[in-house]
Image (cartoon, rainbow, N blue to C red; front, side):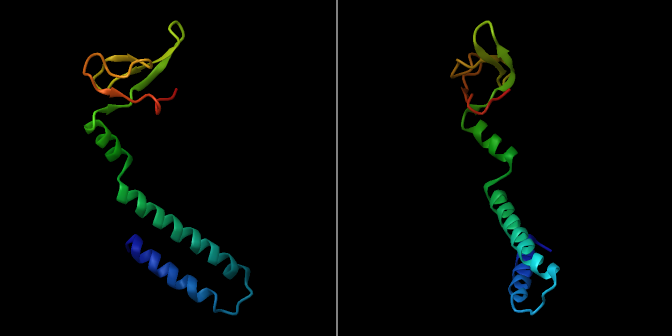
Length: 111
């Protein structure tokens, strides 16, 4: 069963719940559970349409942006140290790698 089929089945079941005359607690809990499941499946579909995290990172690399790998704080200089995708050690005050010239994106790099 695909996600779209599951959404359709859950949505169809969801609409029929309101028409039943059942005071059972499990029926009253089923409606919000189905709402939550449908919302989660729809959100997953949206994320898949955008692309995986790995695909997004690869796209950024193709655009010439690097998120350096965090290596630690450089207390002596008052900055962060990182490693560029090319392997060169870079510092957070640098906008570009001295070795390969790629733009460095430090906003996302955390320790």
